[in-house]
Length: 301
Image (cartoon, rainbow, N blue to C red):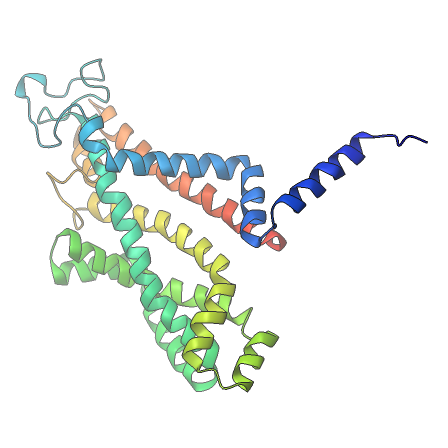
């Protein structure tokens, strides 16, 4: 008697064939879940596109970000100047393209610094607990009582304007949040059996934290790091907009906004396009971060 192949049976055969041909891993399963999330994939594509723009800014931008043309001052968007020109005749499209070289790297670097320092403190606090946890978290609570933007402004005022001073200020403002997020992620995995087994055979605390706890909590850590990039980009733009971050002629998006606000009534495009760059970047990182959350931990859907 011949077997009847139904659509459900065909689907099951294909799934079994895939499982036989390749071993399914947590990474592959997470990637499959991420690919099914259209908004997350759209966010990831936009983020990759912006990174490519930052790397290839010299090729993409038709003009240098410092180039001034006084015969083309405050011209509206046209074929020659896609985003128009500013009050000094500089091409706004070129400045927005070069701005990706500042906003994106600074946002990522600040997250990495905050992750190393704040993540290390959160890891130690969650693993050892007790008095160690109380001391670290009470210090973090005291610092967190100061709004992060105010803390950044104070540090920039002390350190003076400049890219590295801005990085230090924003990284310092992100340490508290990263400490708490990593601490929460480690708390979720520290009581598992493999931690007790490692302790029973004499594995050192450092190896347990780095080889067992961090890899098993990396999903939550990555999610918070991606979200931190978008928050840092907003902070960078805010500080530059109020004049305590990067200043002209540096083509940071917040600085371009700050220059254009004076002429907003007569040339609204001077604030429209850098504002869109900030908004698109932040939304893209948030969409990608939300998709990563669902892909790495399906229970959080």
